[in-house]
Length: 64
Length: 143
Image (cartoon, rainbow over all chains, first blue to last red):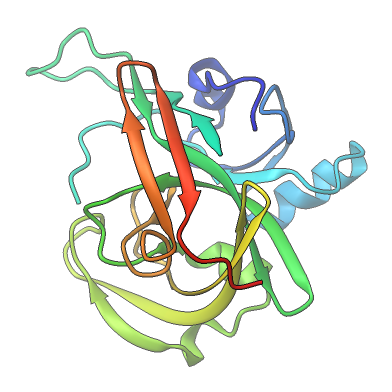
């Protein structure tokens, strides 16, 4: 369970990048053009099991 | 298990000029494929027929994506996309399920999608948008 569920400020600067988020959701611990790049950076920061996501500045207007 | 809705950035439009953020029923999951497993943020989407994750996640997990069986994808792609389906193990809230999920390089939505086949078939979901809570309860435990 995330401690932080507000990703508005956290993800916005990483638009179109792959991001590794700390397991509690509180900070970005890695980023890059691919999930592998984000994971590699997270590991160097000491986070072996981050949550991966593709960051965007817009999560609205979706209908499936 | 209860999860909270998450708040994400949104871009204003002519119809919604004040829209700057949006609440989504997104939860952290873990995708296991053979010896690799990675956490991933995915949207619980009752309108989606299947689970679809980004192709680059498959690549990180060493899933041979294009060896999977294919199906078209409509709705969250630019035009018609292609999805390649594989058997994985999904973990969430301490539960594990063997799930048949799709990976696509054509998925344009930033979050992974948890749909009917592969997710809702295993879990009962209650969305409480007012309280911003998602209650996920397993129907069957496979492992």
